[in-house]
Each structure stands twice: as structure tokens, then as C-alpha cells.
Length: 235
Ligand code: TMP
Image 1 (cartoon, helix red, strand yellow):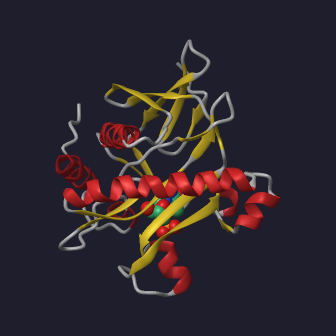
Image 2 (spheres, helix red, strand yellow):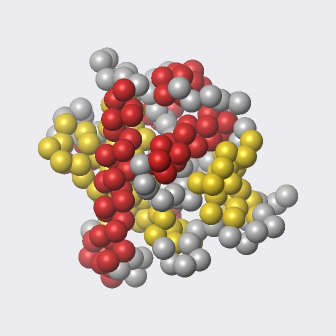
Image 3 (cartoon, protein in one colour):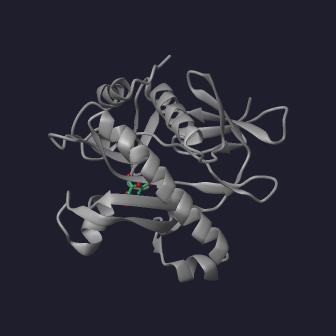
């Protein structure tokens, strides 16, 4: 079956139900806007299993997500959404591009979590947008943004303690939202070591895609470690 959408790390496949699609996790990894690329055998099934676990935990805590079911090793069934072209980043600790932008040392705990919106536009390098820009571009209205911030913070409130129990510091993560056929705002995409910064609580060891971005460690061993700590079974 030909995917109806092909991204850098996932595909979207049509099903017989117009409101449901298959989200397929690929073994490829990219960084720096696709400049760096590699294949990691087994990455897709790890991210599918970890994402399925995260969406289930969120569902149990009352957060609506697009997740319906873990279908097989690389596939999950999800609700079809019209994705808002924003990368919504939640940060608990200074790292990555925030460190570069404001100069505070990496690892500085933020007093309150920050929610940021980036324009999902590879050709522009996914620039940071102020709320005024998001509204001016017509990507979301004020009410939708308020809802989106509150859902993003709820995701943080739910996931932070579960990661902590597994000895992992949830430093920051990226979310994507979309609307279903009724226009309801729903959390989509994935939540995996590709889209989160995860640090060992004691040592600060990096347990996420930064191991690939910065050539720090073996990606598959790292993601397997995350799955094991969270008690996630991988097919
Ligand atoms: P940043 O510090 O590079 O802005 O990244 C913030 C978080 O967002 C980090 O957990 C990694 C994640 N992220 C993605 O999932 N996709 C991306 O394209 C980028 C740039 C970051």
C-alpha cells in the first residue's frame, strides 16, 4: 500500500475507514532538518511501542489523543487529524535550542515549564513563532492556542512523574496537535525518544535522539534501555 504521507521518520497509510489511518514508524533517523541521516534496524518498533505506552498513560489520565491501538511491530492505528503545522515544545530544563538562544547553562531547571510554538516549515528551518505570529498566520486562533497550551502542560504533568519513577528526567519534548472531523483539538504524532530529551536522573546520561545528533552512544541500545526502564514490551 502506498503511503498517503511520507515523513522523515513515519508514514501515514489509508484504511477502509476514512476517519482512521495507520501511523507507521520507520527505522530512519534524521537530524538538523534532514542534513544528517541514518537507518537503525529496530528503531521503528521501539518508537511505536514507547509512543503507544505514552498515549495509553495519557488516555488513562484523561488526555484525548489520536491513539487507538498498537496494531503490530511498526504500526499504530490512529484517528485521522488535520495537523496544525506547529511543533509545540514543552521545556522543564534548559537544553538544546533554548540554551543556544538565551545562553543559560544546559541543565538549569526552569522555575515553571515553558511552552513554545515553532512553525513546521523545513524550508524555513522550523522558526520559533510568537503567539502573535501564530494568530497572524491563521495557524490557530487565541482560543485554540489556550486549549493547546493547557493540553501540552497536562501532558507534561502526567508524563514527568512516570519518567521520574523510571529514573528519567523529562527535560523537554515536542508535540503536534490536529483537529478531528468535528474540529476538536487532539494530540497527535508521537511521543518517543526521537521527540523528547530524556536524561538519566542521577548521571545526566542522554537517553534520546541527542545520542544520534551528537554521536554520543548507540541509538538502539539507548532506546532499548528507555523501553526497559518504563516497562514497555517491544515486539
Ligand atoms: P530543541 O531544543 O532543538 O528546540 O528541541 C526541543 C525538543 O523538541 C527536543 O526534545 C527535541 C524535540 N524536537 C523534535 O522532536 N523535532 C525537531 O525537529 C526538533 C528541532 C526538536
